[in-house]
Length: 401
Length: 65
Image (cartoon, rainbow over all chains, first blue to last red):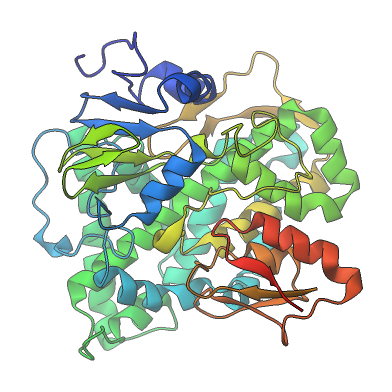
């Protein structure tokens, strides 16, 4: 049961970073649901993995027993970097009420429907510009050259930080989320991100701009006092971390699906009105995000003896493939009418950026299909996937006419 | 047909607004509400049923007309 050892039992010794799980977690969840719906492992500490929809939703709603103060799917390996500057974590995602409640209220208006409509033209122009860069080549890496480039630039614009640094931001976020098992990379990502925002916050103290970072810095907390600078840093770090890998993964997975399912691709090319429901179905089938919770006190959950300090993975991607809730759950049905998916979570931590993510995914697919209606995986293409906290393609070579 | 949004259950997924923008509104904090008194025009009943069936929090419900 050592970390990194091959998995022989998924019910008692699963590993979300194993190559099998990263490549095809769907088969593993399908095997677990009828036999051992909440799996367990002692790799990286005692951790539980629910695979049924209702269990995941119940866990997400029980904030008394399952705290958000440890949300990393991959816990810190080795010494925890000393980050007193992030004493409040990255709220609201890493907080329970009351910190969660008032920091979330600061953030939500920036991602409201109304605001997000205002970001759409910029997103569309960005997508068009990216496509201009490779359309005449007849081939592209749809993950690296397109999907990866979109959300990071949009979120940089909202935060008010230079989009010219987007490759740097992407590097830090990947260090934190995808390479979290490597303490050196994880520390590099954390230090890079925190150091950057310390400087940016410093600049805005004297010269506030019309951006989220300035707004946070000049807001009040629930006790009417100016927001603690460490909270501002945490929220800013969260916006960047949560706004990059996640949506990029959703765009990449959707393009992978369309590159490998000609009939769905043609349907969306010829029937743009089908797009909104198709977006929800792609989000269901390829939900990128798994979160974690920490057990606050010993509790029996559907027969599992969970101990205080255990981790529980909020397996939203697995919940969304539960055949008890979704007919033909492993098949993408673009006009699926009954689709109560939880790709954006469930309960009080519903993804604060869900309106933005949905718009980015829709616009990215619309622009791609408008310019590149016929495309498929390149011959002998090696598609690689990231897994763990965020699942999505990292290399997706496609060809088109 | 008449519908409502339970504000205690709504978490701002905005699925109802996406499916039936003529029937719902969503505020700056994500909280959804019905337009008017929640009475659904006959031609929008299908959309209202979709909104009920797709809310991840079971916050949209049909009420006595």
